Length: 86
Image (tube, rainbow, N blue to C red; front, side, top):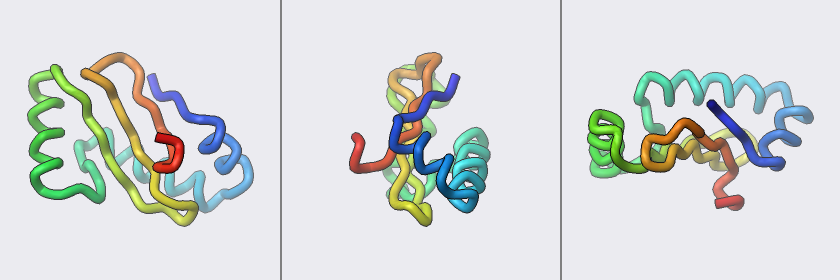
């Protein structure tokens, strides 16, 4: 299940461009494209995803700022938030 912060929700309602960007970055996330991370962080995510035992964090640049997609310890909830909401 994906959840989002109020900041993301409000910006989605105000910007069609941002809404499209969120759709694209979620597709990337679901295909294990972790976005704008170092190669080391991408490898850490790959291992966490494979072993289902640690947090997966992805980072994407959007027209409205940096967005994180975070799943804590491979739980059932994945959160979408702005970097300044972290």
